[in-house]
Image (cartoon, rainbow, N blue to C red; front, side):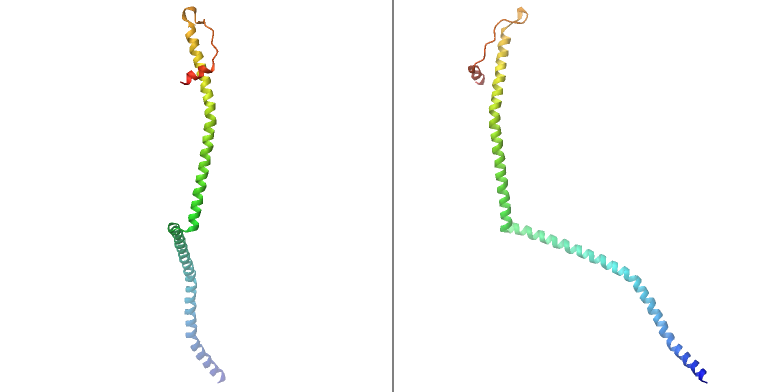
Length: 158
């Protein structure tokens, strides 16, 4: 008797556990599928978050650039001062370079004038030599060369 009752109780117990087991098995399958899909969902959420971060940074940077530009247009005193100082430096730098160029031109003008005078002297002497050549005597010089004086230079410049 006792063994028969125990078998009956165990069969009843198994009958009660079978639907619970089936439900737990279905829940396990469902959780396994969720776990597999969660990696995809997490990766997708990360990608979307990165895009939103990038969009936020772009909008923020653009807004900061626009704010800076508006400050310059409205007259931000600090930026105006920087622009004015930069312009003043450029003016002084250019003026200094122009002054140096004028000095160099002045110094070289005297030198170039002396070269021009020397060249003019040689030209004048060459013309005198050509005039003194006697074509009948086989191109021999028949007149002595005069020495050049300062008055000859002045004649050349007129």
